Every structure is written in structure tokens, then in C-alpha cells.
Image (cartoon, rainbow, N blue to C red; front, side, top):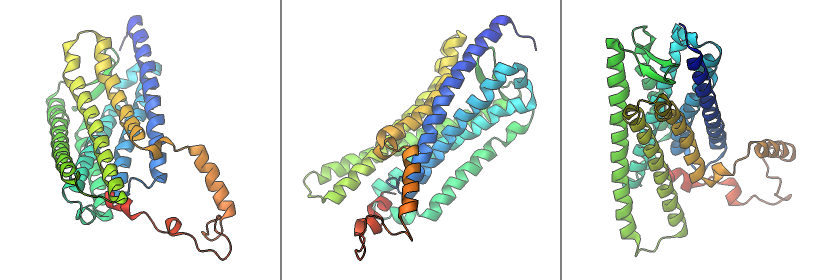
Length: 331
């Protein structure tokens, strides 16, 4: 396919913007992934779900930065190739996994607030692993129709964005498995968050006059913090959905559409990671180089798992040997 000099020039600019936003998204979400592997404040269930949507965020940013943009710069015609078109398929997979992970987060927060005494029996480690595995399998199954050459979701260098094809298959999967599915998920997340917020208000009014221990207060604050973290992430994804399917259609200028589609898509996955960092001090303060040096020091000074600060004949304190059960309850 022949492209004009203006098209190639504009496409290069768009690709550079994609690579910049995508690179920031990769760094942000990689930081969160590494921090989640070390910090214990999230507990098992919330930590696994948070890891799931962060991996999906990283995947989206990686595909845009390391596949879509380089192809556009080096060989734009490859976007018409079968393998080039698969970029859109992979992006939808990560998008669906991210949305489903946020739905699971909202469900977890709802259970925590409505059934605090049963949450450990509902969201067990086994149930959590099954749910996270299922959402990824479901996301993979959703994009299977895109292996067909009749179902297209490909990148157009003249508009700098991904669009669905005009074939009946493209229209069906684009309308039902992408658009309507995303709408249902976002509405479900909003409904769960609303019910959780109402419960928080009711509990707050009931406990105003009640005397709570310091441990109960810390646990309550942590649960509420996780809830508002989930709400902010849900709002970000809802905004991106409206931007991609509605706001961009109100403009004819390709650069404005580019901002409300591709840039918004990249931006929401970057912001999703930033929200996790912003709401959690442990993630903010995590330093990969400090972790490496700390691991080296501990490995050389500790033998048989004995704390290096414990003197000979001295028993380690309870805080050093017993896991924080409150964190497990937050799940």
C-alpha cells in the first residue's frame, strides 16, 4: 500500500508518542509488579487480584511500545499482514483481563464489607487462584474469533488507532464481546462499588460512638483505602471506555481522535498502576536496588533463617516470627 509523505510523517510522530506513553506505562506497572511480590500488606487475595490487573496493564503497554509503534516506524505495511493484525487481538485479551480483574476487585471489596466474618472462608487461597485463572482463560476464549481473517481489529496508520473491520464477524465480536461486554462489566463494578460505599457509610455511623481498638481502626482504614483505590481504578477505566467509543466520534480531526482513543487507552493503563502506587506507601517506597542489596546482606549474615539482630541465646520477638493475621483478614 502506498502512503503519502504526510501520512508517514504524521504516523512517525504518533508512533513516538505511543512509545513514550507506553514506556512510562511499562516502567510504572513493572514497578508495581515487583513491589507486589515483596510487600505483604495487600494480603493474598487482594494482592493476587491486584497483580492480575497490573500484569494486564503491563501487557497492553508492552504490545503498544514494542510491537505496534516499531512496526509503524519500520514497515507500516506489516499492519496488513496476518501477524501484524494479531496485535489488536492481544491488546483486547489484556484489556478484557484487566476489566475482569477490576470486577473481581470490586466483588472482593463488597464481600469484605458485607461479610467480614465469612470473607476468609469465601475468598480462600484456592478460590482466589481458581478465579484469577478463570478470568484469564475467559479472556483468551473471547479473542479466539480474531484468529479468523474475517474478524479484524487492526491498526490504521492514517488515524493512528485500532478499529474493528466491516465484516459481519468483526461487527458481531466488536459489538457484543468487546463493547457490550465492557459496558456490562463497568456497570457491574459501579454497582458493587456503590453498595460497598453505602455499607461503609452505615458502618461509619454505627461505629462513631463505639470504642474500637487500635487494631480494629487500622484494619477498617485499610479496608476503606483499598475500596477507594478500586473505585479510582474503576472510574479511570469507565472514562477510557466513554472516550474510546463516544467522545472521539464527536471530532473529525485525526489528532484529537488519536488522543481520545490510542492515547487514552495507553494512559488508563499507566494511571491504573499510578493509583496503586499513590494509595500504598509500601509500593511507593519500594526500591528494586535496595531490595537486591538487602537480599545480599541478609543472605550473607543470616544462617538457617536466624535473624541477624538476635543475640546468642535470645529468642526472636513475636513480631519477627508470627505473620500479621490482620493482613490476611483484609482479604
